[in-house]
Amino acid sequence: MWARSLPTSRARRSGRRLVGDDDRRPRRDRRGSAEQHSAGLVELCEELLSGRGEASGVALAGEIFTRYGEVTRGPRIAFFEALATRFGPDHARLERAVEAWRQNPTDTTAAELHAAAEPRRQELLRRLNLAPGGTAALVHMREQLLDAMDHREDLAIVDRDFVHMFSSWFNRGFLVLRRIDWSSPASVLEKIIRYEAVHRIRGWDDLRRRIDPPDRRCYAFFHPALVDEPLIFVEVALTREIPSAIAPILTVQRDVIGPDKAATAVFYSISNCQRGLSGVSFGHFLIKQVVEEIARENARLSQFVTLSPAPGFAEWLKRERAAESSRVLTAEDRAALANLDIPGWWQTPKTREPVREPLLRAGAWYFLHARTNSGYPVDSVARFHLGNGARLQRLNWLGDGSERAIEQAHGLMVNYLYVLDDIEKNHEVYAQQRVVVASNAVTKLARAAPREVVSASG
Image 1 (cartoon, rainbow, N blue to C red):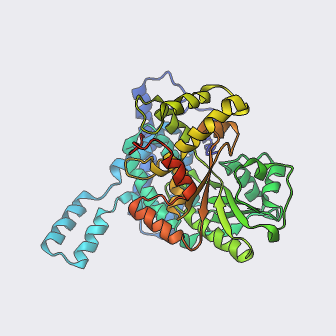
Image 2 (image 1 turned 90 degrees about the horizontal axis):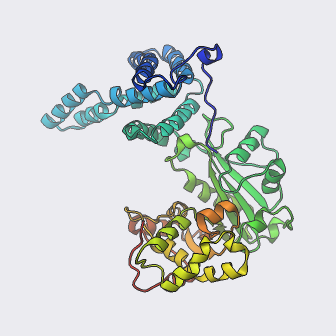
Image 3 (image 1 turned 120 degrees about the vertical axis):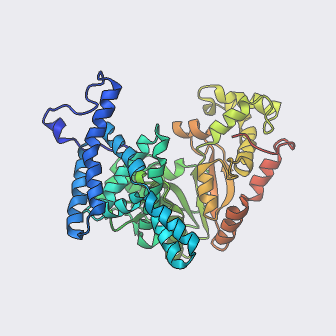
């Protein structure tokens, strides 16, 4: 979903060869050429930082984006390297500021020390943002930086400055919540189809079934600098009860209910749209505001839940099954879970039913106790909802039978419950003590696992 086509260079359109066109050239030559192609960009950036006139700065920032859009991967990475090595703090100024603060630690010298410690890259990003469409161009530039960082950890220092700036520019005060329905602009609807990351939208008819009926809702956050570009959106189903499977929600043949008959709002898909904004958190604001919006609209709603995937569960369980002495699984569990290795195991009762109980017990243990090195739950979706103040409510056996869900979670899905009066309390206990707030049903499942369990692998 994140793939984007890169701007075609003028040279390529005219048939001339650019760096990287001929992979038979020696690596050293390609690197040298890349540095030469990026040198002009670096010079323009230095000029932008040294300039004083706003009007000329806007034009220069636009020229930098134009030049950047014309370079290929090699020169682009060389440009990122220059940002890392040449646009850090001014060391001479920083040394003077440190010495001044040591000699006279006042608010004035502290302010100068703070300003001197700021990398020049941050001011460069601020000035580039002056160009028309500058914010969108910088978001796209960070997408390409993230691609480069797959093999270049030394560029992380540049990425930190992007995240620092974006966290200010995309804070909640600038975000606008909009409901997406069939009357929304076609350009926005097309992007909802394209960006859906959890349950693929199969064309316009499928989209209409998700946003047009009276028991369906879709909300998205937008930013004034990215016109008609959703940042994140959530799809909601209004139902009578808490659902245990996704198929009844997405099916073509279902009974539409009136909002006055619904008691539950189900958040069944949340999709981040801009890869260049990954690491900038605004999803928790979206959930809370949508809950408030729907609650005002329909006073009959008494339950706000998710129907969520468990993307890391299958990999975690695979490691536990492979461990010589797993403290999560008994020998009987291992024998039953061997059915998971049989193609199509979930399609026949003979191979499916023995898996149910040991998998649900392992799932409960996974969500309650499996932790990262920093003490957070290993499951990324769990971290998101628990961090927002939700409660781990229920595990759903074979809640999603799609190929992707079987591969990632053996079909397991999860309900997280948002109780309006408990959101802040749950958030605090999770944030401060890493405690997973869960229902009695889930904690009982976890207690049914081997008693000697004290920690998780991974």
